[in-house]
Image (cartoon, rainbow, N blue to C red):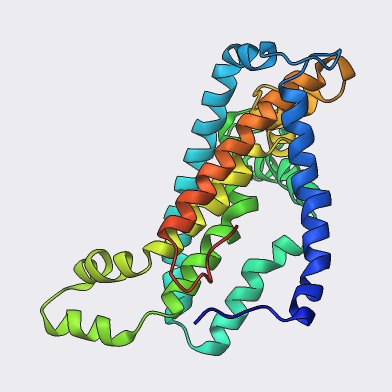
Length: 275
């Protein structure tokens, strides 16, 4: 039997509906409008046709995002597993340590990492004291990927940790009774059961990684032009608003596809879903 919303429940949903229309649906409609019009407001597909000239930027952004997501998964999955196996007090401590950097602004964290990796930064100063040659890190693709991993790693760990914390230990005991070793248990029992958390983590890292621009500007030294950088540059001048809107439209489509994939493979209870 379907539950019918009462008048009070409908009234309580009004602020959320108004917020959604004003700050989500409205801006999306404006982006779509600018993407399919010219500077005079007439319907035009020229902005969409220009997207082919930005194909290398899309390709580079997707590559950087996939590499950063892969590193976050390689680091985050074992970390989430270790956290889930610790006693509750230790889990709380590790969770605070994991979330502590996210309480600081992304800009400050990126500046801090840039200070560490700069030519005269802490890392190169330590290498100089050890008699080693300094490394050029800022302005490289590795620095950009490192910044993405550093900033978005918690978003990979949290959903995987949630899935692992709900894992019934009886499955692990049954696997051991059936002769599975630790590696077999990990790949044949734990990984399939925590796959929804993995899919959620991948999406939650990939989406902000592909749309970031500040990390690539500061740690990339202006040597890498990603999607976020291109959109920001296009919206600096009114004459290029429409091209920027077209690129933003493609970005929204990529995000919607990622979200749809995550919702498709997330738990049926919806705790790891986003809309």
